[in-house]
Length: 163
Image 1 (tube, rainbow, N blue to C red):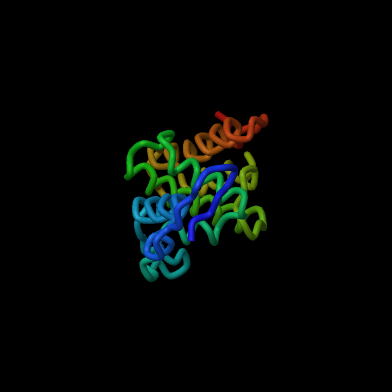
Image 2: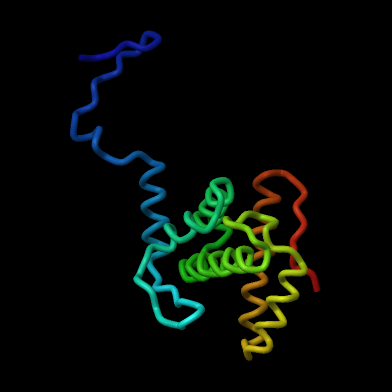
């Protein structure tokens, strides 16, 4: 049966077409596949866990608004390379762990990591012998996310990363 809306005849869609995912679902599937899977290492015993989609890990680690912001950021051309999108997703999960351990936050959000937490984390990384390049890359993820959040929300958001 055809439907008429404001003088326009709308043809009924075939049943098979109704089962096709919408654009939002297709975008989510694309991002899930682009970010891929990872086996996270248990920080206590250093053993690898099961392989999981990075998108699922981000959903668990972040509050709803932050998850939507991060998926918008990682799905945009602001992060053009697939390997960068994957590394950024991994680093956000790392920062969620830092916010949980040092800040007592159950879920990651923009602003969950403070300059004091970064100072503590940076000192620990140096003691563990992490390369300065790795430390700086992980810090740059927080700066890039903060800048994207400020642009997206049109709010003034200060980066927790200082010189």
